[in-house]
Image (tube, rainbow, N blue to C red; front, side, top):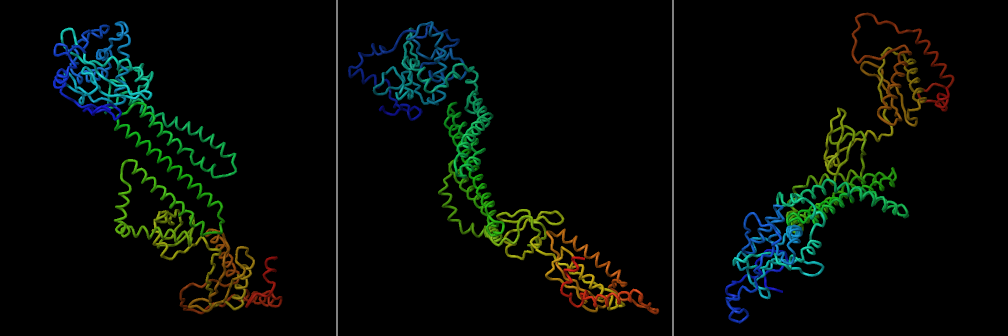
Length: 587
C-alpha cells in the first residue's frame, strides 16, 4: 500500500500524498541517491517521442500533470484524437505506426477514462515537477489504477525533457502499452472504435450524445424486447405448468403474463446504464428506477394472484352461503390494500427514506390519527358488517340511508346507489350499517291489496256475485299465491260498500308483479261492470229529486244465479267449499 494522495479517483485507484519536489530532491542528493544538481535530469528523456504525429496548430499545454490530463480530455471531448495522441508517449512505436495507431489508442484511453470517471483534472498536481511519492520514480505521476483480470494496471504520466531544455508530461509508455487491455476490460468494444466522434464530443446534462441515444433506445425498444422475451418465457413456463397436477402454478404463470415484461424492462435499463458508463449520480438514479419498476411488476403479479384467489373462492362458494359471498369483496379489497402498503413502503426504502423511523413516528402519532380517522374506521367496520349480514347485493333495489335505488358498487368505505332519476349517490357504509335497509329485490312475493268501493244501492246478491268472481279468479290464476288469500265484504264506508282483497303475487321482479296486478285489476273492474252496479265516488251526492230504481232485471238474474250456485255447492261465500279450487282450475 502507498500513502494516500490528494487525487479524487475511485476506491480502487491509488491515492498519493503530495510533497515538495525540491525538498525531496535535496534529501536525495544529501543521501547520495542522485549525483547532484548536474545529474538531476538524468531520468528525463530528451528525445521527441511522437515524431510520427503531425505538429499541432498551436503549442500544447502540457508542462504540468494537470495541463496534460486536462488537454488530453479536452481534445477527446472535441473528437480530435490526433491531437489527443500527442499527449501519449508513443516512443515505443515507429513513426509510421504512431500516425496510424496513435489516434486509435488515444480514443480508447479517452473512452475508458470517461466511462469510469477516474480522474478529476482539478485534483491532479499542477506543479511543473509533479508530486513525489515513496517507491515512485520522481519523473512519474500516478493518477489512478484499474483492475484487468485480477491485476491492477496503473494509469500514469511521465516527465520528458525536450531538446530546448523544457520539460513536458505525457501519458507514460507503460500505460500506453496497456491501453488495449484496459479497453477490452473497461471499454465499449467495436462501437467505441467505429462510432463517429460526434457522439462522444457532444454532451448534455453530463452525458455524452451516444449515452443519450443508448438510453433512448433502451426506453423506446427495451419494453418491446422485454415483452417478447417475457412472452417466450411465459409460453415455456405455461407448458411446464400444464404438465403438473397442481393448479396454483397455472394461475401463477397467468398472473406473470404482463408484469414479467415490466421487470425485464427495468433489468434491461440497468444493464444499459451500466454498459454506457453513466456517471455515479445517473447510475444511482438508473438503479433506483430499475428497483421501482421491479417493485411495480412484483406488486402487479401479487394483485393478479390475489384476484385469481378471490375468483376461485367465489366459484367454489355455494350461492346459498351468503355470509361467505358477502365477505369476498371485502377480502379482495383488504388484500389489495395490504399489498399496496408493502409495495409503497418498499418503494420508499428504495428511494432512500428511512421507513423504520417513519413507522416509529406514525406509531407516536397513532392516537391522533385514530381520532382523525374515526369516521373512516367506522365506515370500514360498516363494510365488514354489511358483508357479514349481507342485507343486499349488487343489483338489488333497496331503500337505505334515506335513498332508494339500485346497488351499483359496494366499496370498503362507501356504497354507491343509482336512483330512479339515474343519479349516483354515495352512502357511507357506517350510515347504512346503522340504519334500516329495505330490500325490494329479495321479496319472494308481492302484495296485492286493493280496496273496492261500490255504490250503496248495490244489492247483497250483486256483492256476493262480485266477491265470488274475484275469489275464483284468484284461485285460478297461476301467479297468485294459493296458500293465503282473502276477499271480504269489509264494511260500510262513508260513501261506499267496501270490499278488501288480500293476496300475494308470485313474480321474479317488480315489473312482472305490476303486470299481474294490472291483469287482476282489469278483471275486477269487469266483474263490477257486469254485476250491474258501479264503483262509488269518494264524495257525497245531494239528490234534489226522486232516486231512480235499481235495475231489477239484472238483479233478478244475479239472484237466480246465486241460488243455483248455492244449490250446486259452488258458492265461495262465506268460504269456498272443498274441491272448488281444483274444479275452477280444470274449468
